[in-house]
Image 1 (cartoon, rainbow, N blue to C red):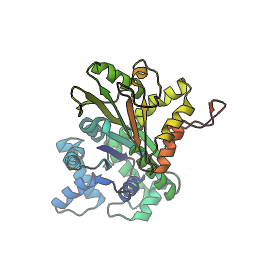
Image 2 (cartoon, one colour):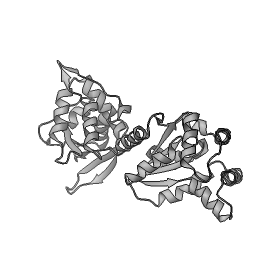
Image 3 (cartoon, rainbow, N blue to C red):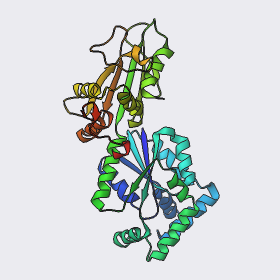
Length: 327
């Protein structure tokens, strides 16, 4: 399970981001619902004053991470591959989610200036919205007092929401495609091999990927396996350039591309990887090779992976270089 959480000042675009994500079929957990449920339980009107008052009271009584704590059980019950959280209001909530979910948790900050945010407020007309820009400033101050600025500062990804609505939606869709990239790596551990030796071969190529030991159908043989995301490919990206094998690498990626264009599979020489180098054998080696499968949610995203890892070359040099944030 991967978890993406949107953070930002009021009316920055968090709800719109969640709406885009939801339309893509991803489950959204709205933290604001925790407060609204409490307001309803107390038989109060869902005004901005009541919602803010209840939120402050809960935070004073149960801690600044109270809404996150109440949201965690809801998230734990879900089984989806990717879940979105909408409504983080401060650093304590971020820290709670990081504690609960570790590296599975990705924080996305949505940045938008005050004047643009107030224009959105005027258009959406929610029951808890602000009547004038001064009320929006007061709302900003309240959320800053909860550590909203600190939460935004430590975001893993920042998205600028200063253009058109369609531009913003496209950014969110691209972000989801990026987060849905899955990398699977595995290698057999033979009876004559040391498991640490094989693990080091995998980590020489794929960094600190978490590995698990699995049984195989063949007696006395084990298989080391791990899964990751685009970040898992960073070291591979550098090795293609260091060893000047961009064209060879691209041939491997293209040669293993599935019919639907959503996954590619290739193998790497395990012995060569054990010394921090890279080579692509023509066939499975006698002691087994490192198997790599990259899966994406769209053909466009797979093309981006190809161009980022192994861009086309001219006279041995890349025609262009993509940065990982361009995904």
